[in-house]
Length: 174
Ligand code: SF4
Ligand code: SF4
Ligand code: SF4
Image (cartoon, rainbow, N blue to C red):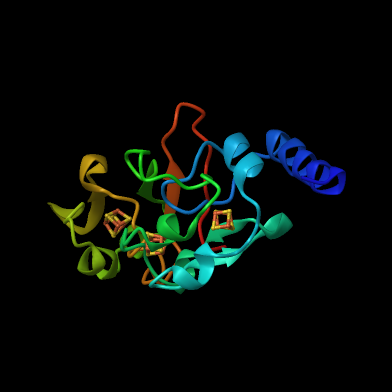
């Protein structure tokens, strides 16, 4: 690896340590420092993603853009990665969980179930409250972080948040 590339990777990590939000890496990624060290930025995972959600982010490293679609966990990105930056031995594939913020239309008493309609695992349920529009609740254990609910929300009320011990907030697709 060249000195120039080393310097570029060090700069990226320095920037990330002082930032509060991290880009969403592909599923089955190593921890962020390991990922930055191992990823050669070859871009081979991008065209192999069956839903086209992998894009080049800062420094040329792959990131996930959920405004383009959801992750189907097809694992084609992992198969394409020859450096070990992505590894099928990592379980679960990532720690992302969906969260819903007060921009949700139901907080303005507007009926909307667009997110739940997209959720295959039925992680989003609506509990009726007397005299109010039912609000969505996410069961974290059922959420795979697939991102299918992200782009259908008309008010961008859904965030995908990393639930690792660092608690880093991953704002996807924006
Ligand atoms: S698992 Fe499949 S759908 Fe998900 S990011 Fe990788 S290639 Fe794309
Ligand atoms: S295939 Fe692997 S090494 Fe190449 S850009 Fe994707 S994650 Fe990085
Ligand atoms: S990220 Fe996927 S599994 Fe989680 S609530 Fe949204 S649609 Fe359901």
